[in-house]
Image (tube, rainbow, N blue to C red):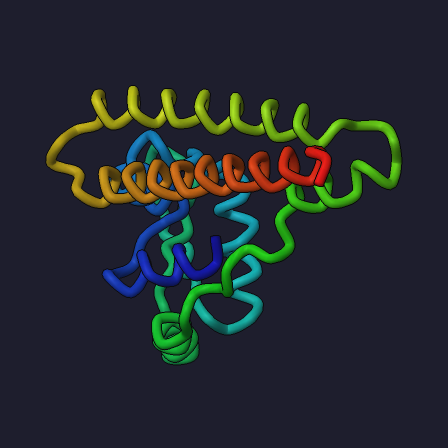
Length: 174
C-alpha cells in the first residue's frame, strides 16, 4: 500500500479518501478494495518516515481534513521502486509446501490436494471472467489486471496438471 499511495501523490496533493477513490477507479473491481482505515494508517507512517507531508485544511461545515503531499524523499523512494524489478518467481508457494509435505504426514493425499486446488483455481478464473465481462471497457488498467490474473491461473492449472502426471507416474509399477 505504501508505494501505491506515494505513486498517487506524485500526481498531486490529496486526502486519504481521495486516494482510496483513485485506487478503486484505477484498478477496478478485480483488485481488493482498499480499506480507508488502512490508507490513513499508512499515510501516517509515510508522514513519520518523511516521505510525505500532511497539512490540515479547515472546512466550515465539516471536520478539518489533512491533505498530503509527496516530499523529495518520497519522490526518490518512488523512483527507486520503479527502477527495481518485481520479485522472483514463486518458490515459496504454500500449496507446493502442502504437496511436498503431505506424504510425510499421512494426513493428506497429494492427488486430492491437487484436485482441490484445481477446483479453487477454476472457481477463481470463472469469477475473474465474470468481472472482466462487467468491468468498464474504458478502464484498460483494470482489464490488464484481470487478464494477468487469468493468465497466471492458467499457468498454475497447467502446473497442477504436470504435478499430477508426475505423481501418478510415480505410483505406476516400473
